[in-house]
Image (cartoon, rainbow, N blue to C red; front, side, top):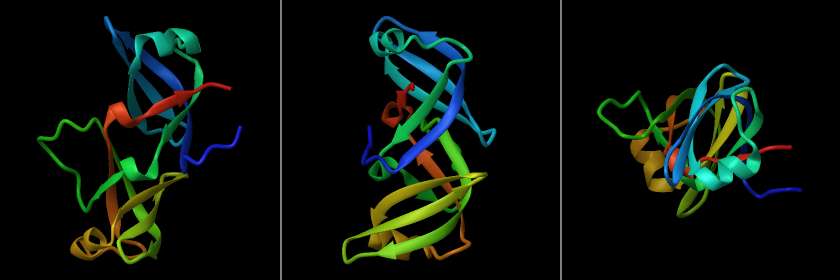
Length: 139
């Protein structure tokens, strides 16, 4: 299956915390960084997730926000440091590619945000992704 989701990050489940309706899943990406996904408990069961399961974390580019430094006092669990590698600007929206320790993320953000953050190639950034916006797939 081919997906339109730009960000497909391989990793391994390191922790699974089931709740009544939702579960949190900690994934160690192949680049060594950790990512948290909040998915339904039913989905976690249907995927057969356990510690050690191989997964791909999927994140739409429109769900990736950028900051120019780590952010304290924020409920967003996933803060992945990286460096801007490419920018494709449009009138309203811009695609920003970020190198994140051996992986690449794409963020679709407003062109105004790119200007306000003064982003260009080689700018250090932090990709911010809410755990509820991370989907998981198994092969």
